[in-house]
Image 1 (cartoon, rainbow, N blue to C red):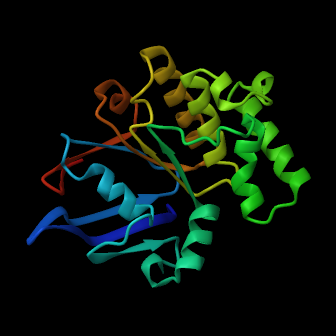
Image 2 (spheres, one colour; image 1 turned 90 degrees about the horizontal axis):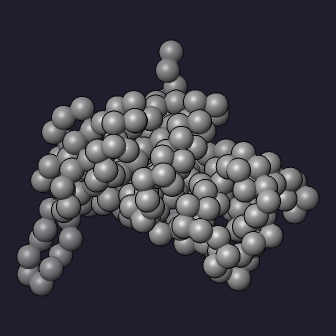
Length: 228
């Protein structure tokens, strides 16, 4: 039987603008299973990135619940400290902008989540080296982000996102700043991580070429998933 990684039920998100309540996500239900690879598409303002933030426990829903794992642990019943630790250990995030720490090398950036989790430095460094080799950057481990190309920076960000072997990897327009060649390399890398390590992948993208390579495509419109 396929293992449940994440389940969202009746997710809503509203924001207040002056005296007005703006509904951005409207009653989304979604199951993500181990090894799933899916993309969410839709026009700007459809609610894609907001939904990803809800699913990734980066922002609380106005209504609804998010459950994780076969035991269906309710994420929004956790304390802030426990939720932060949970995200670090179980979820990976890659954004359009890589958010690498400029004063640290590629190796140090990839090590960072492992060190935060309490992993001993030699073990964290060994895992980071292995991942940088996996993403084809073993010759760039001592370079800082400013010394790397955009595609290389994004590959470092991907390596950092999976250093703790998360169950689920989120990508938010992660190819948005890349040319077509580097976009292909990044998607190749995500698909290989998905297939080799069974890391579930959920991507938000505007790029039809990117979405066409993903196993399942969900379409959002006006805050709802309207097709799959």
